[in-house]
Length: 152
Image 1 (cartoon, rainbow, N blue to C red):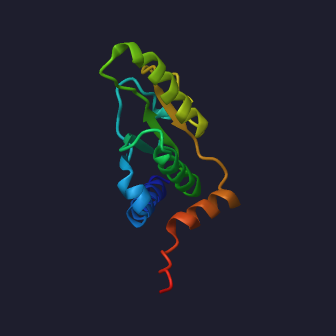
Image 2: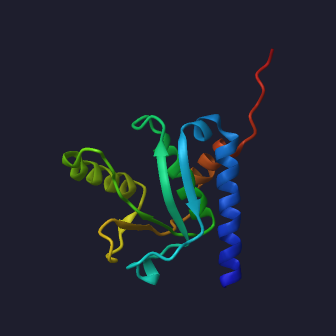
């Protein structure tokens, strides 16, 4: 069972990186680190997830890049029956903005199926795998299909 899970995690991460590299939009839109699970202080084992979304930062926030990358990660996780853990943590130079930013960040993840875990960290969120459906398959096909050269 552990070997199968390890294989699924490796396959999913390879597909994720390949899709990011293949798409100029995703590759150039920001930075994302999706990795095998780590041990986080205060996180219960059942909330740890099969993958960690360590960081994600758009070059131009608010333009949809983060939603696209997160949807890609979620679709691939569903395909491989994997859960994703994130410690949602907003940062700002202005402490006054932090509560609103934190709420928007948690809402962003919730929109993609993440839920608070109840673990020690107030912003620990987990997305359990959903059934892999035709819509998810179509989105993945669109991101991973080879680019068609334009006719001259």
